[in-house]
Image (cartoon, rainbow, N blue to C red):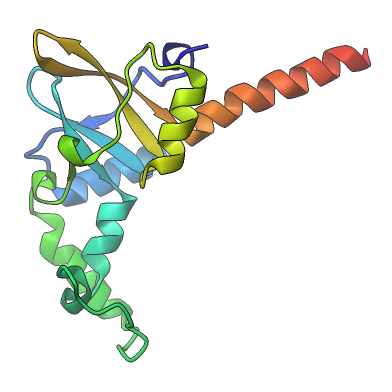
Length: 165
């Protein structure tokens, strides 16, 4: 079994110029945690998702490299978090995405064990599935931990139900 048999092909994507607030709206509407960011020719640029949003909500002192790690002394003010989110809402998602070079990726022929290992190592819950076409990274799908589990769980339970009959 390969990634091609379990990947999600019908993707909701963002363009680099889409605003953060529009990305959040799409994530909410589609009930997804991560959206791919693609260029005009469907070339994969990066991912925008929950990880980036959580980072945006952190106080500035925690956002910088080697910044504060103990934030227990800071006030837990929801109003400040709203303000930070409003401040970045009109900025392009390109300013906050995880770029392709920082991500683990796979292709449609990646085997099931390989994709499990990649998902295990990944900071994200989804992996972009790319096909190399004339040196362009074309996004053809995404595969998530849930896609893998769903395939396994459904097969296990369907087989158990069939055996019980």
